[in-house]
Image 1 (cartoon, rainbow, N blue to C red):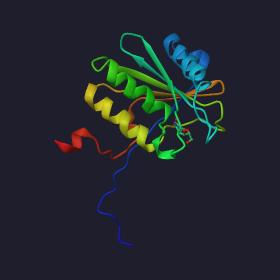
Image 2: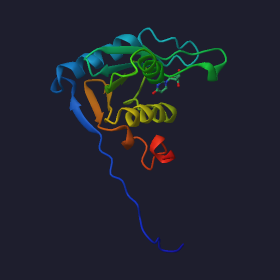
Image 3: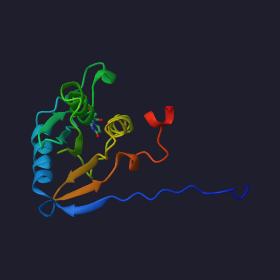
Image 4: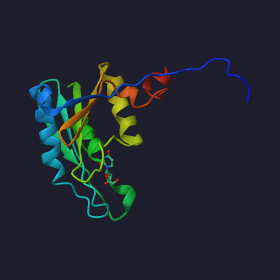
Length: 159
Ligand code: THU
């Protein structure tokens, strides 16, 4: 194998906090993600997920995963929440998205398709979107969706 001409490297940081050490509105967001996860429609996977979106006016939009007998017709909690926000509040910026599953055995990170959808809105609003993964008494915080998708393809790639 030849020595590479150059190595492109990206450093990603997930910051871990105790739930008691984060701002109140972030705590509320986590509580909402947890609450709404209990209402997930997940009869096939039995893996319930809740997501809660914090908008710039401090409102919180909660949603959960919605499954279907025709499996690919279902949708993750994150996209259910984000599409609702974009449909109803297209001009309100998204500050953060909290994600929780009572059925996860580790912190739950968003799937690839949800990361791509989050990236779309981050680029559209020209402001970073914070991801907050709520697991047990901890939260794992990622500051920008770009960090979920190093070397991303997004709207800016089409310019
Ligand atoms: N799921 C989510 O809602 N969010 C995630 O971040 C990962 C997976 C859902 C999709 C499906 O209904 C179930 O969890 C099992 O994959």
